Amino acid sequence: MKVIIENIKKSYSNRFTLDIGKLELAEGRIYGILGPNGSGKTTLLRLISGLEKPDNGKISYGSEFEAPSGEVAFLLQNSYLFDFSVLENVLLGTGGKSTDDQKLAMDALREIGMEKYANVRASTLSGGEAQKVAIARTLVRKRRLVLLDEPTASVDIYSMRQVEDFIKKFNKNHNATVVISTHNPSQAARIADEVVIMWNGCIIERGSPESVFSSPCREETRQFLENWRI
Amino acid sequence: MNEIVNSFREAFNLIFSFDAGVYGIIWLTLTVTVSSTAIASVIAVPAGILIGSYDFYGKRLLVRFIHAFMGLPPVVAGLVVYIFLSRNGPLGSLGLIFTPTAMVIAQVIIIIPIITGLSIAAVRLKSKVVKENCKGLGLGKRQTFRLLLHECRYPIFSAILTGYGRAISEVGAVTLVGGNIQYHTRVMTTTIMLETRRGNYDQALAIGIVLISLSFIINSILYRLQEGK
Image 1 (cartoon, each protein chain N blue to C red):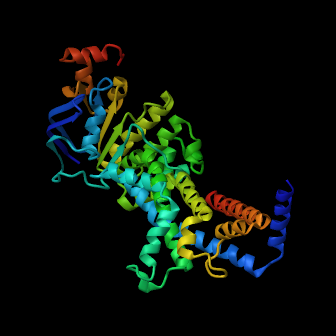
Image 2: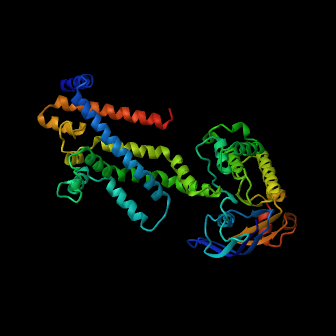
Image 3: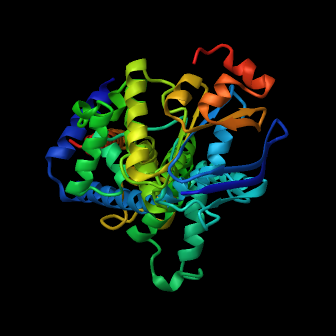
């Protein structure tokens, strides 16, 4: 799904302002939104998902101006598992409980190495395990637009690679537009087709990971990247 | 001390005498309190979830009113119901005054604010995260409501139990609108009051012990139901 963001502004009690002139997200591509804490990554994803409305400007989704329910999935930073089993949680993402849905859910759990926990109560999982289940629930069925807010913030390095492979496979199978916020440039380099650098609520730079990381145009980008080895 | 021992003996005798009068009082107490709690819960729990999880104009004022009415004196609620249902009242033609139905109505009015207020507090903490996660998954409003109810079921269950506790211990309103008529509207709390006035302290304490035991048994049953056993 193609998403066009035009002239959006969002303020929170004059404490923080997001201000984006234009951003186009093409169908079937993976975007990595990078930036330090408080740069506006989460706010941008919340606006795209429709969880919040911009003060000004518009966001269009294909030919519509409302995020089409059922075609958009958003994994929140504070993702929450319901007090059910792991499998039942993932089934919430499928929208049904049929045999086909159960198979989809089990396949998703297998992709992230959580199939053996299918019947375990979600409340007994560790933080990282719960995060992986939340990712499986978000990516369990076809969506045209997927927004992932720091999906691997609490998972270990091995699981991080599993999750990244799962995201890439999902993107390839469903030709979905995937937007991932992260403050990890290495991760963005591994999975994103394009990276968008945010600083103080604005987009300061965008392009392919190779070009942005090898020769950043802005001093802020350089500052942000210098602590990371790509 | 002797009085307490005698009361326990009396309570034991009351239960195992299988006296129709005593069992009638127990049965009526159960019928009235369970009915009022069930009716109040059907209204108050959804209302509490909606008020607790949505922002709207006047919400703060409404919540303040609900909290104020959580401490509504039962006798005031009874008085209002009495005025409405008495022969010359607006609903006097229904002939409900001094009936168990009038007692249920009074108790419903007393416990609705309690269950609503506690349900609001129960959902307030979780509503944002549950609603946002549901929206993130593209779930509809009905399913979001069901999931919110599921996630808050323990504190909501406690709210219902608190309402039931208030109903079973209530005496002022049921005396006013029920009239404490033998074999018709006499419940355990009004019996205790009557027997105390008559100076039958053993009998009053015995009924009190039966009342507490009954309350304990019902709470235990409900807890087991809650745990799915």
